Length: 191
Length: 93
Image (cartoon, rainbow over all chains, first blue to last red):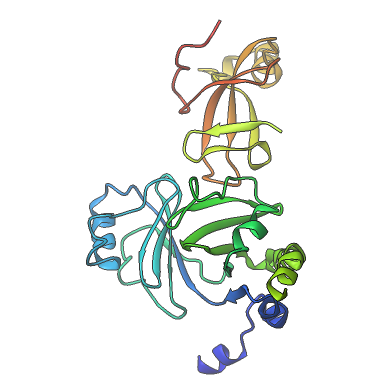
């Protein structure tokens, strides 16, 4: 297993240098993610919520429409009614907590691009039709939508910090599109 | 571009959706008893009104839910969105 992990390549490993050169984009490879499809009112979902988000977020329970909840690196993103994406650090296995629920490990399906800084929102807005202004889309917001025609999940983890979940097969296209969209802002950082 | 008010995700661009045609087309109670004309009518014949029209939409790039909407075929205005298998709330005349 260790040999296999040493050999794997993330979908954007070949663009790591170019992303880093922008100063505000990077790939977060290999994040664990699980899709959970269940009514949040089910007792099993309450148990899972308590197991995943013990502590201050227990009361918050599962996120409502367009929202994400989480503590530290672990987030639950609302994808649709009764449809959640649980995201955690690479290598985290949550199977035991999800036993008995319709949950699937989809870690390999997507990779994550993280954009931070004052220009993150402007770069995303070039290719995204939803309103990303803080009054409409702030920290803790998430949305499934199109970014430059690629289907993505947008998640704002903190002020001016966005995660873009994109399918591995679209990652190269989307990263190159973002690099192109970021050109003008990279120059502004230099000045 | 139409802005389609998804009942779950809010207003989104039309390109995130698939169009599902006329809503409330009932499946024949006994398909085997249909004549060819009746079956063809069920399969192919749809209303094409100039005005308010109840139709189905699928938010394929978002929450991936089907829903019904009442849309004006001239002004493209949406009057209501509502759950599948329910009747439209107060269709404007």
